Amino acid sequence: MSGPQIRSVLMLSQTFHPAIGGSEKQALEISKALAGRGVRVTVLTRQPGGLPPEESMGGVRVKRLSVFGPRVVDSAVFMIKSFFWLLLNSGEYEAVHVHLASSPAVAAVLAGRLTGRKTLIKLGGGRGVDEITLSRNSLLGRLKLAFFRAAKPELLVMNGEVLAWLKSSKEFSGLRLRLFRNGVDTGRYTPLLYNEKINAKTALGLDNSAVFLFVGRLSPEKRIKEFLESWAEVMSEEAAPPKARLLIVGGGPEEGALRSAVSQLNLSGSVTLAGPREDLLPYYRAADVFILPSISEGLSNSMLEAMSCGIAVLASRVGGAKDAIIPDVSGCLFDPLNKAELKECLRRQMADRGLSLRMGERARKTAVEKYSMARVADELLEIYSGRGV
Image 1 (cartoon, one colour):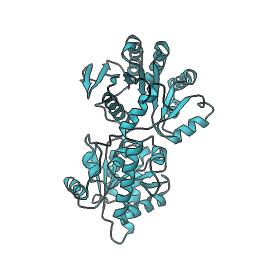
Image 2: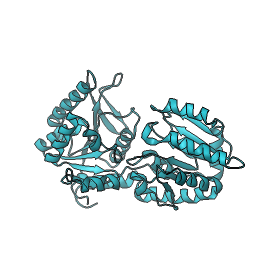
Image 3: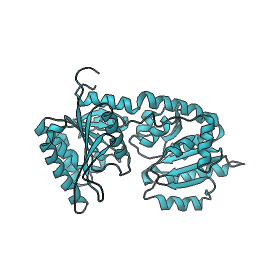
């Protein structure tokens, strides 16, 4: 890396670990990776009940600001407090990395203008459920977007689909956009040997069936209910039901409906809803194929973790999956609204156990070469220092 390395970074996020979510997980992992390179990292976040105002987490200083009131008041209080904290403590950081383009991003951009500190904003969500689109639905959101158009902060966009839309939009084409990506700890998420994979399945009470895995929030845009319907049809259309199991790990508003669907579709023998889990490694280790049937997606942390574990991917042809997966090489992509295409992908994976193994090897290669947290951290340091492409 040429030139002096940046020595201190401020991560700004409304929510942070132990809150469970893709943005929170990335913020924590990036912070730890930077701290491991000798960068002084401070995370500025809200203080939920029961958590201390300050603590150290994996070499990262976490500073929590107290908030109060209903959601709108809570957000406003955090935005104002963040602004003044950034002003009063500008000597403690050289760059600000805002996780998601919510109201604290406004505070960070304003403070950056006054202190001269570089400010980056990570844009979350896939096309249609991205933060730009959602912000158009409220007056405060539209005011925030107008501020971004005027201030022109640098936005990190997580997939080419959203980047292309923003660039082609007259309303947002003036924004400073940079295509970037999430990272994954490829040293923690690693492939298993054949006998280790069998042991991992046994540990979850599974036989040596082909294990399909979903990990994520159970919300409508993930289209898990529609996936269950396709799964049931594939199972019923074969003379002998395929030897396959589906594990669904996560919680969310659709959980009750999914449990009802499993019962109504007579899938209790092949589908397990495991609920939310903090430790996902046992599930990745048991899986052969990772599924992501979303109608819209940013860049799924869970998909990257699965790829790093050497798991083939079966995903909708949208968002980050379209960028990360090489069709018929590291996974199978399908139109999320085309049931026949999805079922064909399922049948191929169920009929040929060696296919998932070959695809998983290529998925691991992609994770290491393109999405490793080590590479993401190095490139972020370049960007913070103003040298990134």
